[in-house]
Image (tube, rainbow, N blue to C red; front, side, top):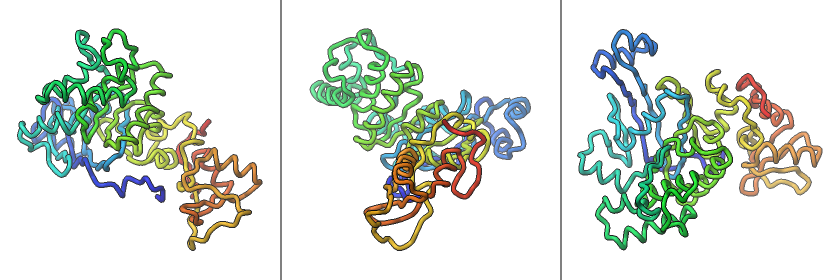
Length: 364
């Protein structure tokens, strides 16, 4: 992939290495049975009295990347995210944060990591009603033992970051649901953690407020360059926020890829079903559908050209305006590929440039 934001170039912050979480009967026989793949969920429960909530999760997350994990209820996504600050210990496998296996980390070191290196925002923000907005944000800093002046300064800065600086002396009951979620984000940001864990933080909000917060969070995470693991059941939210998306089913990760990858090349019908009704016009970029060319020559002024990160909507508009069957794709002023009108139409319909249908349904 040729887009310049590819996660491949980023230093690794978080790794999951063959992580399994067995609830009910975490013994060796149950783990081996789950690993064998010979039993489905019901058979495993009946024969061994256990459930594999997370099965063989292996992936890495780059610095500054927003990594969305999506799945239906019961797919294991919320269980998985709690491994990254060790609220849950894995039955088997390793969770690596900045090169350290937190599963073997002494509690004193783990506590420091949780308080300074990792921030978490839950679906229910759980603000204390008897504390002001500022005092709610100060709480984790107070637990760290910072001075009162440092707590106030850092918390006020965090509130300013999320646009609630003037609400510091108000109480949670005076805030809307969306504003309360912003306070929760400010509380997680106050200690300036390297890693943010977001467990469906916007799912209880009205659709318009959700979309607004999704856009604001994306802008904020880009500005602050925070590495973020974001749990959601909403594919539109994942597309809007995520650099990459992992799709889970019954504890297993069935596909990991950029939004474009999943839109154009879902691995099975389950993944394709998440894309039903999703328009690819703003999602698929030129680098995903172009035919690469060698040379690196500069385009002529008469050529209809688009940037490598232009989306389908831009390419359609230019193709119609110029009457061009082919568009030239430009990166850093040089030609790197071409996109045919046929390739654009295939992408709109969910067909990749090699002519393989990627999902059974057309888009809007």
